[in-house]
Figure 1 (cartoon, chains in turn yellow, purple):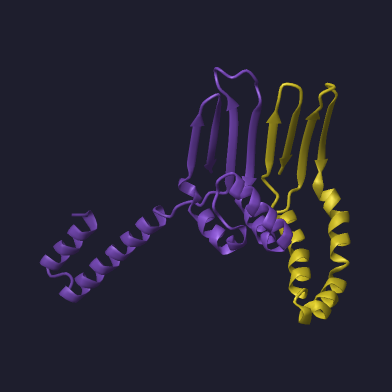
Figure 2 (cartoon, each protein chain N blue to C red; figure 1 turned 120 degrees about the vertical axis):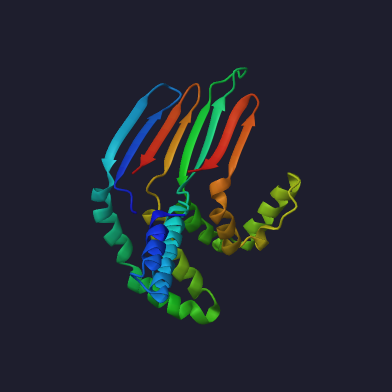
Length: 91
Length: 138
């Protein structure tokens, strides 16, 4: 499922903290159409490059972008060290 | 002997049902039992790969790592391995050989790794030393 929320907290070595709680569905409303617009051009490019053997690469790499986006939900990173920490939670 | 089987055999003994009917009823009961045991024994596939690193009691530093990666994301990422340029694959092989891993990265195929991922529900790695490392699926 596509992640709808991201919780991000970062603290660097200079002790400055940065935190953000972002509803990703607002981001996807903009990003997904922008990613979908080149689809016909990608298809045409894949057809043109298919005899040379690179069409498959073009098609699969384009599909892989969507595959990665749609499977990111549930990713959680919590890395703490003495001076800094990074916390990323995609829900 | 289950209650239902008893009742069927009693009805057969009393002549309330014929032998064929009793046989059909007993078959139906045994079929229901097999379905219920099959549904209860269905294993839940793991959804996430967890990697946890915590400092041990004798550790000098206090670094902690807690990572949860959806297995679907790993599968999606594996499909990208075929897009790695051949030059980069060669460098990866060299790095693996330097660490003593005698494996060819070019032989790594998504379907082989898919088979490994499907068996990960029993994976559990615990390493205790200066740091405690746990790798498991949930």
